[in-house]
Length: 178
Image (cartoon, rainbow, N blue to C red; front, top):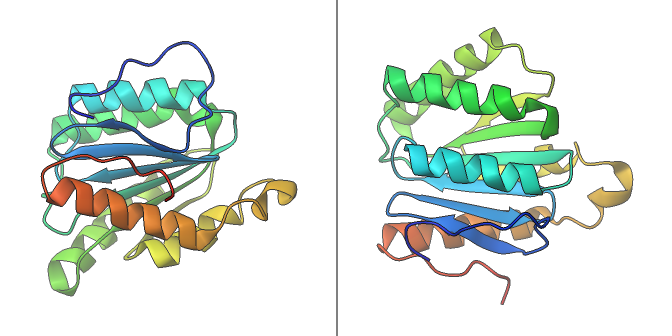
């Protein structure tokens, strides 16, 4: 998929990639909304993100993975991100950022985002981690109990790996389980 996908008014039942551009992918895995970004968000990505959220049954779990090579968002992007999350907060059950990267740069970005998250008052729990392996079990425990067994942490992690691979190779591909 390139340059996004037009979404109908129907609820999303698909498992896999529903949007991608050169720097972002949005995927759905049950109630998990997984995004992978190589760069700060653009308007088309945020609009698609909002469209997907609107078609998912609440509560959704958001897993936003930011590649280790991505730069921190500028002030305008931070404001757009905050606006988008605030507008959709009633649908979100939990939100986790994964800031990939070892060393000082990754740790500094995680620390900064943790501080920003502490100051933001959303009605859902938030967390910042370094890996999808840390994030997936934390997110899944925020599903309703009857749905926790239906969502496997290893599948979420595998989908993050596939999204990273697709974007870093410069082409989007389906993330449906093979």
